[in-house]
Every structure is written in C-alpha cells, then in structure tokens.
Length: 519
Image 1 (tube, rainbow, N blue to C red):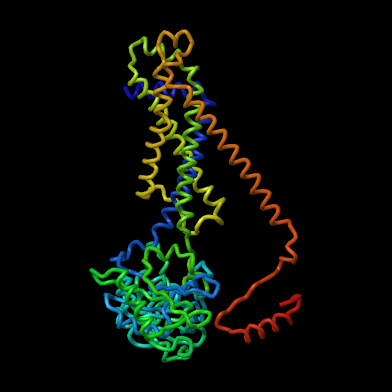
Image 2 (image 1 turned 135 degrees about the horizontal axis):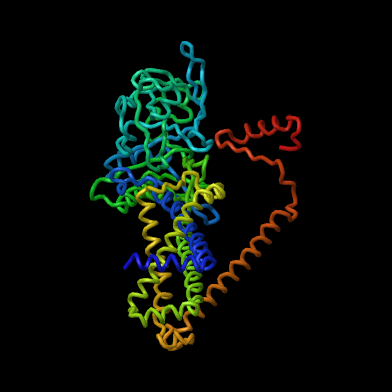
C-alpha cells in the first residue's frame, strides 16, 4: 500500500512541477531559519552545564545604589570581604581568582629562539586565558590531570598549563618533559611549569588555560596590584569569587549571612562611599547571560548572550515555521479544484476517506522531506553569510544527536500540521459532485478557514514589507544625518589602572604623532 501511495505522489509531483517547487522552497526557507535559530539557542544555552554539582555552584556578586537611584553592579568582594571565606557558613568549597591577560614569553633554550605569545585565547584578542588562583579552583571546577596535582599551586611562582597552552609554548614533545620549564608573564614574572591538565571540550565561560599560583602575587612585583594570597586580592576589576554550597544550604540563607556580615563590619561602598552594598549568590548557569558585566572592566571578558533575545529568537523561529506551513496550506487548498475529479474517481473505485487522508499525508511528508534536505544544503552558506551576526562558536554538525532529533521532530510536526487540513479537505469532497466539477460548500471543511489563512498571510507580508522599509529609512537617516562631528578615524583608549595623570600624559604623547589632529 505504501509503495502505491509513493508511486501516486511522485507521479503527481512530476505533473505539477511548479506547484511542488514553490511549496518545497517555501518550506525549505522556513525550516532553514528554524535550524539556524536552533543552533544559536542550543549553543548559548549549553554553557557550563557539564560541571559536577553545577546546581550548587554560585558566584558572589552584588550591587549598590548610586546617587541617581540606579544600581551599580559589583562583580566580586572587596578588601574588607576577605572574612567571608571563613566566617560565612554553608560553603563546601570556595575559591577566589584574578583573571589576567598579559603577554607570554618563552625563554630561548638550545637551538630554539625566544618566543612570545598573546595573553588572550588563541584567535581571540579579547578573552583572558590566564588566571591567578589556588588549588581550590580545581576542587570547584575539576580538570583531568595529565601531569601533577592541584597541590602544586600551594607554592609561589608556579603555573599549571592546559594541554593546549603547553603544546603552544613547548611543542609536541612528551608532556612530562615540560615540567620545570620557565614561562615569563608580562616580561618580568618568571614562573615554573608544575602541572598540566587536559582542556575542557565543552562550552564554558571559564576556559582558562594558564593557572598561576595566587601566592605568586605577594612574592613578586604584583604585590602592589594583587597584594595577598587570600580573598583580599579580589579587586572590583577582573576578579571573581565562586562557592559551592553544602548540601541542605540554600542561597537565601547565604544571602542573609552575607548582608549581615556587611553591616556588622560596616563595609561601605558607592559613589559617596557611605552606602552598604547588597551581596548575593548568582547561579553558575546565569553568568553567561549577565548584561551587567562589561568586558575589560569587570573580569567577565567573554561574550554575553541576552536571554530575553534568545527566547524571542525561538519565538521567531516558531512564527517563521507557522508562516511556511500556512503558505503550504494555502497553496495546497488552492490546488483542490484541480484534484476534485481525482478524489471522486478514487472514491468511486472504493478508496476510503482514511486512505485518501493517508495518501495526502504521504505527499506532504515527501515534500517536507525534500524541503528538509534542501534546508540542510542552505544552512552552512547562510551561517557563513551572516557570520558577523552569529556567535563565533555556532557550527552545524549533521550527525549530532541533538540536531538529528530536532530535524526528525520538525519533519514530523510540519508534516502533520501542514498536511492534515489539506488532506481532510480534499478527502471530504462528495464523489458525484466532484465528478461534475462543482464544490459542495457544506462538505469542503469550511471556506472561512481558508480565507482567514490567506488574509493572515498577506497581512503578515505587508507588516514585514512596511517594517523593512521603515528600518531601512531609519538606518539611512542614522548613517547620513549630521552628527555634529566627524566620526571617521576616531579611536578611544581606556585603562582603568593608569589613572587620570598617566592618561593625560598618554594623550600628550599621542598629539605629537604625525597625522593626529587632536587627542
């Protein structure tokens, strides 16, 4: 029976090529958009889901109210907060660390010349790969140790490297031979390689690859910038504190203890230096979506996703698919007049209504399958064309389990939603009237729904056309209107560590460069 249905469907497609192509193309574009949005959403919703006991891991953050009433976000404890490491109950594990991004120098050895590397992630000039921390980091965020153990970070002037950094610095030799070698950070901080861990192969915002012992800071010139080995070193710039709650401890209990501690010790902060900050625990699962963090200033130097936008995108993908399905239904019902006699003859020959519905669903399944295959061919070119608007790590892997499950679900759902109404409509025609070529209005499934779908489709199309014209005019206005200044070739430099005096000296030096009009 199925073979018979397939033969009839293929014959119909061959005889109605234009209708088939239009329907397949419409579905393919809608499905392609859904696949791309699925890849983006799945990518951004997958960060840091792999850590053991991730639901008990939190970051200590806070906020204080400014004079104007706005809340100022605080990403880490301040000097006076060092006591929370020991005085706040309910922590199973805690760790503070200071993110760094300094150039790396590998001294010349034998025939190998001196080599230098950036302090950011490979291929990325923005994301830190270095961090000053202690053994507790690996208790909270376990790594697979290839050489050494977390205890090596108890001593100053030590560094643990991820395998990727070790290979980058020292080549492809045995990892054990890299232990004891020297790595120099910021041109003047020599440390010894004491351990090597395996890189994480999952999505994470904590993908550091160079772990320098935090006790190095008070034993080097860093003592003025990162003065101690405990949480006193956590400055409001580029430092963070993470904790794992003990079983049975709730975030609300710790939040109350944190703020009680602040008031007991009169820890004040703010523009007027007389406001009590409010500290609280932020779930690990939320740090990828925190808009309050600003790169190069707060310690979160990774790309942030905006969670409401992700949900909006998922809604848009459903809406696009609905439009594609409505287009399919409208085209299919428009063909109903041409298929009346076919339905009448098949009913006279003994076909049941259920058999006809199954026949038309098989046709829809074939067209949906063809649309899915075509959309798969379109995904990679579309990702490449819109690469500047899509997160860098988003990639399409056809044989990934999640992707295959999504494709199967979208194929079945589209087939049922797009095919059931046309199949029910076509199979409802009365044989006698069908053979005469006239419609029985009472038996067509109702013309009102078809009219509603057509009006809806055209209305949405008009909304999109008008919206596109308005946005195009807005962009043209912003691009061509007089801003009151010449915006070409203007650069902005900022260094929070330098201070006003050094930045003024820097501006004076820049003014003396040939070709600079003003600074």
